[in-house]
Length: 90
Image (cartoon, rainbow, N blue to C red; front, side, top):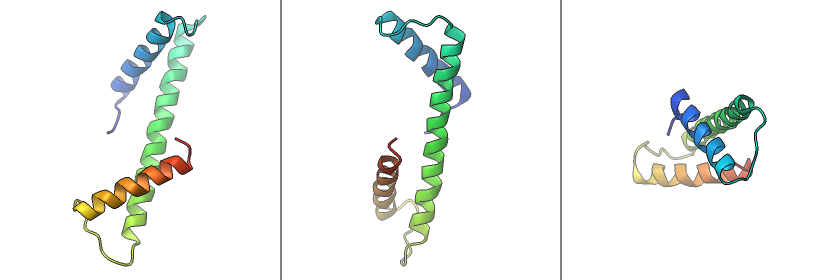
């Protein structure tokens, strides 16, 4: 799922508020904390997009044709996606 800028902002706010409310972190500069949280979410989204492109290319290079949207394609996609995310430690 693609995260929009609004969703990233909302999630960042939720994370920062929860960390503060649960007394897990204190933020002397809340604006900076929000920017860092947004940056982390954006980096993760970029990494997912890179993995998605990599997996689609990998499936496309198979010796047999696997049509996108089919059950086999979905299974291969999920398997390769999870493997690549684990390899990148994401």
